[in-house]
Length: 278
Image (cartoon, rainbow, N blue to C red; front, side, top):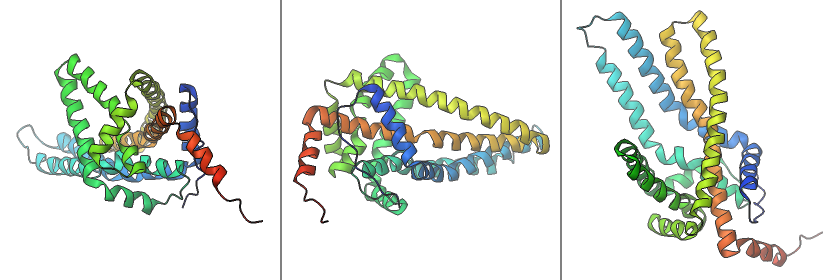
């Protein structure tokens, strides 16, 4: 169990928001990174196995023998299915933990998974909507992609609104749009800067992964090494993804502070709270 101190609410400048994101990640690193890595292991293992299987089979079979495709398709399909089933956990579990931590509540692994399960289908629909439409927009042309980005930023804080305010998906989407309205460009800039930081961190970790791949290639088959590397890339991505989820939670609180003076309500609550008995 992770014991949390409530987030001190205040208007955050862009630099302060990025700093607070990494501060929160460091404070609960084992919990946040553990959740993210635990969720990445099943799909990483299946995709790595499928790739290694494909590489070995391709080397050992003739051009007319396609029997290796059956286990390959089955393994890759299983990886895709697992990824789909755990999508609400992958994209929202760390966010739920960050919400609980920001509110000063104790955070446990069981509590996090229970919180996601209670909202599993709304979260699945929400993330599927953005994943599918985002892929389609990227494949079509620039205009649909720009429209998708505009909508995505407007609905960026749907998940923390659902968790903290305990509201439905539709209400959370309206709530997010209301809070982001008038501050779209600032929200977009914060997300864009964090994406750059995320990308640089990912490149740095990938460099260590490439070094490990070189060392493994000395003692293992290159096909097996390729599968291990693919699985490792999935785990590396999982290790850096919590910063984006934490940032979204901080964006939610910052918007509420700026629009609704939530920090003043927090201060009034603390002043009204009875002093602890000596």
